[in-house]
Image 1 (spheres, rainbow, N blue to C red):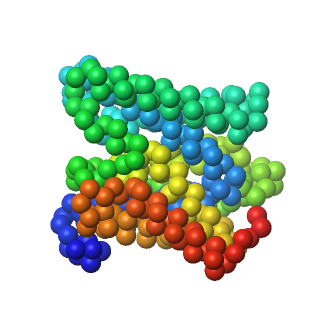
Image 2 (cartoon, one colour):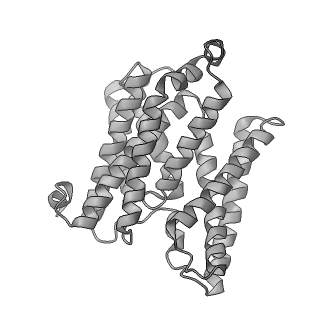
Length: 285
């Protein structure tokens, strides 16, 4: 069965999920490479956790408007709004305290609020809240064709954007002052990178969930950094690692009943990182 899934012969939906997960992994790997070079990896964690209350509030809003609350674009919009609010909160708090402390405070606060909202939703008995908690760890079992296409095209759009912006992003990551002298606005590039990372987080909700998407953003990038000494090489290799993990992880999940896709993808990425450590050892920087 696993070979059928790897060869895209396990069914139309399984093939779509595998290809969508591969594009998501590639986008996460490429975005994560620039994020780690900029030393902002923890920011992705804050954004991911800040999406949770937005998902709950979007569900309630759609139910109030007469829907069942499970419309994916609506959930993604709600997640994007609270994630943006979380990012804004981190930036404001960072003026008063260290950025890591600000990130941790926002992460915990938004995540706690999201858990409370989801718990209240489960007790309301309105809409279709069953399975809504899968945004935490991801689930592809009930994924529709439209959902898989959103994930695939969203991942592809992020990859194209990162490729076109790779030079200014690299300049800002290594020397913001030189980048400014060359006419590149570091704050604008940082904002663009965060927007692309947020896009990856949003399209990855159905596959890895908001908790594990952070691992997919960081782990392939750290592994790639040990094999490459150039920015383009690191981002490309990180994208390849993410794509392979996404594709194989989705195939394994499709082959084993009730096996969640997100944890399998993350375990594959972690295994690749462990193998890299054994072969290449620890590198400075």
